[in-house]
Image (tube, rainbow, N blue to C red; front, side, top):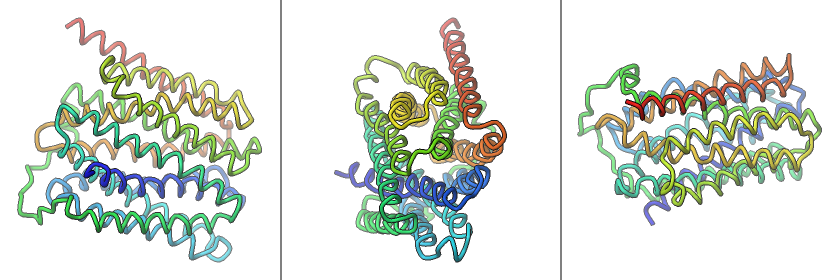
Length: 386
């Protein structure tokens, strides 16, 4: 019951985030903005989180999860309100830009708090199962967010969709308030350990490889969330069809995470991560070959089967390989890497795609992630030989 309440907070917050990313992209594209401008909007979802993630992790270690979670949900609510209140005609891009910053920052505070709390409350032997349940919840929000927002955009418009997100964000705030007894607050009475410089974490060999894998998988995740709306618009898909393509990806992450307890008994975390990188390379190779909804949905489903398996295994490795008392800090470093990708890559992909097209972006990512898979295999073989 406790785990369910915590996961529900993450699900509601994440639903607003993924729906807002898609809605903001399509809202801007509907008003004739360029792919580069869409990249700027998406980058702002992660700019502030990139700068504050490590400090947020240290703050979380010091004060407990209640304050970061409540502040995070309030930021998400404020971000959803702006594009609903101010129309594009009246305020141009400004509401979308500010909303992206607020929602991205809020989600970071919520996710890092819930992840740490789940890891602390779960029995070490059941920690992978707890994070699988968390990941399943995130898959549900990852599916429902794009699908419902696509349907609402086609039926009611972009501003009304943001209005619906306000309702979801309000539910998140209420859920945090009613669950505050589950979130211990330290009130600064516990002095945290001396902060470790993030570079020092990379001296831990396996932790370094975990963070590198995080970077590659994050790049894959960000590419599909950015390029699919752009590519889908270019080939003439409707908002609903684009939503179903993104929803197919999220549905696949749900399916694979549902199977994770069985897979975890047969495969190690690193074997799953290697599979993730190779399957992502195949999916990115296939994407530009299709221009209609059904085959793109199938390819997105294949991509989701790979990437969806990654998060529970990475989170389990982070909690088991982190230095003692530094889990929040390591989570912050991990989020910094993810958000750095989310800031830089949409700008690069937007500029790159404007010149060379979406196909070049897909194939470039396929080469990168395939190389990462080969590198992981070689590292595991070297480690086994020692």
